[in-house]
Image 1 (cartoon, helix red, strand yellow):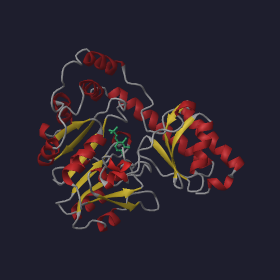
Image 2 (cartoon, protein in one colour):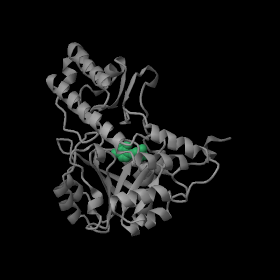
Image 3 (cartoon, helix red, strand yellow):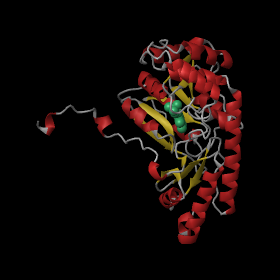
Image 4 (cartoon, protein in one colour):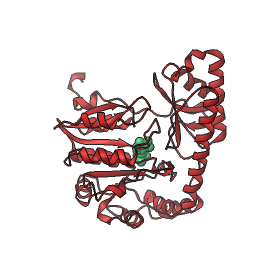
Length: 361
Ligand SMILES: *Cc1c(COP(=O)(O)O)cnc(C)c1O
């Protein structure tokens, strides 16, 4: 067959960057590259998974009714305000494809979650990345200035992946007061549970009907492998996103696991504690070595290293730990596992001994 006669994807898809997966998985002792929980699911969650597996020949409820009810009750919102799906990534995708499209623009801080430009592109929209400020935090004034009549959505990620920085509630409200009410604001709160002062977008929903909050069971709840997340927003936005979403978006096993995890505060408390200790330990160890990092509200630490990110990533791998490398920018390390943090510090010492200039910030 003539190569020219094949089906062609839309131009935006053909030009799309690919998601990167955790590097060098075979030589890795500790995975610190994907912000997964360092604690396996609790026995209660494993039991719920097994029980749900026994009826896997049956369809789940159309909209994940059981999990929706649990979330609505705890967060004091109506069930109609909650949409669940196969990870918050899927829900972000569904919201963007519902509210944006060809010729429209999606504004977000950058660097941030690598999915945003991809999701905007898949929806057919133009990605408008707005550089973070010099502290690695969202520059809300610059983001506001980037909003044009073509803007249909703005994404705010707090704590921000990968820098860990957080948007303050006052600055967020001042920002929301100025964003046109016709623009959908997506608050990505994937790391909310790890923050000492979490920005609670759900508490702002009554004041800002153009707001949608996205959270996940993949990080603090330890269910990354099962794919479960939720969106809380106005009833009208939720109705529209549901209308545009595939039915049975949350599988029965993931729903059962998420419901059990939702009701298990001791697991979250333990993970959050391990993460808080790990963040402090790793940041202190790095500071002792002259490597200064921004305070992080997530389960990871950002090491800004424009000259040595790749080298530090290679060095960490040699010490048995995979980290996330952003070439020319820095390295993101998931925390909570003391041995992995020690390995990263040892890799920094290696680099200081062999190529100290690489550690220049
Ligand atoms: C991990 C992550 C998500 C969510 O992932 P899912 O596993 O799809 O729920 C969303 N946003 C950010 C910023 C993340 O880091």
